Length: 250
Image (cartoon, rainbow, N blue to C red; front, side, top):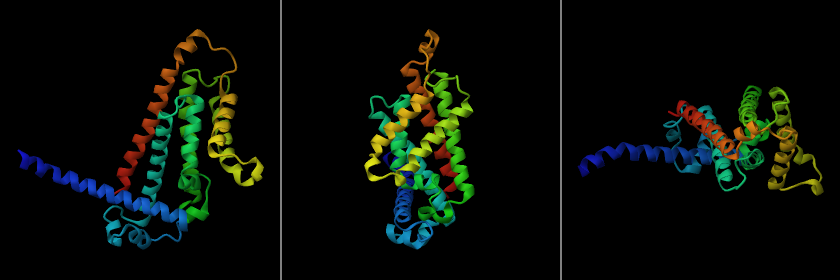
């Protein structure tokens, strides 16, 4: 039996080593793109950074483009995992305000995700095509809709405003907070923590119900139910990304 166990565990160990090596390659690619930009980062640079032959990269991805597509998926997955961790350590994390604040903080700590959403060609170069940037923003809007549907169902966000208008308001406020900092004088700059908190408070003031909830709404909108709904929402996004990663990797 011990020999049988050892025999069966061989493929698992090999798979684990392959995954570890793929992570090292993606980690190196992320660091080099932030430092030099996508256009100047070659597969030779990445291989040298990891300490492997260039051909090793092709054991994981068919092309340079597939590698960088996998990198962006990885960054989005890390963003969601970071959000989950922040929420888990924040007593108010699974609330309207807490989710927005923690997601925004996680986003601010991800240079590649910020560059993709804000169409930053200095970092991502031709990787940020107009089509890709539009697709990313379309995905953000779809996520905003799912988020608002959860809040509206539990009477945490008002239903007096059409959801299309709410999506517009939420997207405009969120993008505005991400874009404004370089334009502000130093005396009006705030830490990421303070900016994320102000963003969440602003959205909550605009979109939260402006009337006392009914007893039915209170029953449907208990903090536990909202927390569970938000957790399911995040887990669904994580699972979708993991499935997409399988398609790109060899």
